[in-house]
Every structure is written in C-alpha cells, then in structure tokens.
Length: 271
Image 1 (cartoon, rainbow, N blue to C red):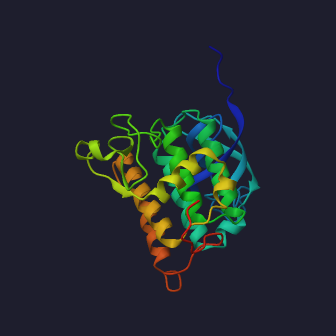
Image 2: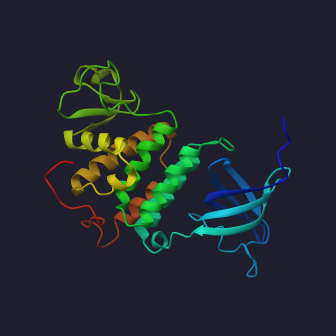
C-alpha cells in the first residue's frame, strides 16, 4: 500500500472551529475526498495571520495541509466562496449552521463521501443565491438521510409495502417512512402528514435543490414539514441538533412570526 504524501491539497467546507490556547484553532472540515477531518491552524487568531478569514465556518476554501501525528496542520488557506449573503442574513446563517451540524453529526472522520460534500455545497450555494431557507433545510434533511442509508419510504407503506391511500398518513422514523393506517399501531411514534406534505417530500426527493426552492409553500405547510422532519432527524441522531434551538430563536424574533422567506407564499394549492 502506497504511503500517503506528507503534504496534500484539498478543497473543503469549514464546519466549525474550536479555539486552542492563545492563538491556535482547530477546524472541522468536510471535503469530497478526505471526508470529515480535524486540523489545527497555528497562530490563526493573530492579527497578522495570512490564513485569518480563510478558515471561517461556512466558508469554502482551498487548503494545503501537512500530516501530523495527532492532527494535520494547515499551512495555506485560500477562500473559494465566502457566502456573504448567508453571513448578512440571520435566518440564512442559522439554516447554514444547522446543515453544517447535521453533516458533522451524521459522519465519522475520514469517511470519504463526495455525495455529502456536494449536498452541503449545493445547500450553501442555494442559501447564498436566495432560495428559501426552510426549503433548503427540508431538502438537505431528506437527501442527507438517503446518503447516510436512512432513505425514507414515501411511495408505499414502510411496514407492509402496501399501497398508500391519498389521506393523512403517519411518517414514522422507526418504521422508515410513511405507514398505512393498518400498520400504524405497530409503527411506533411519528407525525401525521397531510396529502400535500407527502407530495412535497416526494417532489423534493426527485428534483434538484434549485427546482425545489421554487416550490410555493404556505406557512402552515412549511411548519408541518419542519415538525415532521425534525422528529425524523432527532430519531436517527438520538438527540436534537443544537442548531435547531437557534433556528427556533431566530424564527421567534419580532417581525418574523408571520413572515415567510422569499419564494414562499400563502397558498391553498399543493405543489
């Protein structure tokens, strides 16, 4: 087996940072071919550091690293995409932080997953480009589960594989998807979804994130989907993501209670 080069290049998205000592920081990075990994940037918090600003969380950067005994070491960093529109908007920032946390928590270190990298990249670009934050979050959740081996069964009963009627139906994480009325009692906890919500999830599964961002959702439908997917995510993580609380705080800020993100309008018609 060939020995890995001591110095290597990669492109990655910075998921989070942890300060170490007076001037150093440890960053968690997600890249297409190195997977998720931690690396240390020495002296990055000093004013004159050349890497300062290029390793901020939610930044896509071109990286040069040297392999270390316990942690690899950043030697160069160059910003590819700073995603300024995300940083300038609290709701978009909160949603991006949430997606980054899910990418972090659902993966182990050094497990190569190009699909996950591309999914997070698409979510950040959609948020930066003006797509509704709620739509981006739902799309990311659904496709993340599929990539991690937890794809939800949406076309037939997850328990008996029977036909689903166009009526209110249980979404059960324990069963692995939608459950017909006959199997509901043995499926465990879940959330009832209306016909429109089920159609939205199926559509999200089959289109790209740009197309899904154009779907018109009224506020009630958006909340229904948010609550259902929150239960599913918490089931598979066995905890509630920390960033979800931040999302709730942002949503409760004055002036946002009845406000919809751009691209989401009040409508009685399903997608």
